[in-house]
Length: 155
Image (tube, rainbow, N blue to C red; front, side, top):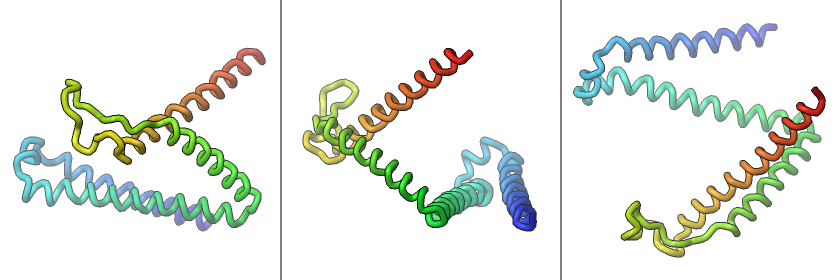
């Protein structure tokens, strides 16, 4: 019960600080913020951006630490996690072999973009990311349709 109270206090503090920073931005004139880079943006906009950045970092670190703590406390979860990571690694390997290193041309198709030369490792990894996302989309879509059909059959 005590930890729940502490968590509520932390959530309230985070919300109040974020709200105050947001209201400070809303109180300023939009055009003045755009025009006055040195003074107004640095004193009003920069704090909310920095606050958001550090809040994001804290959230990511907390999520990772709690996930690792959960895995350590329950070794059966470790087996499931490693199995899932293994499957994702296999899909990544498949996506890597499906991708190519062809040259990347501009929108007109006339010249090769800087860094997009044929054989570039950047092209290979961008292609891998596209294939990886596509494969995961197909798998997720398949399971979604199967679940939908099961739901329709049960009704």
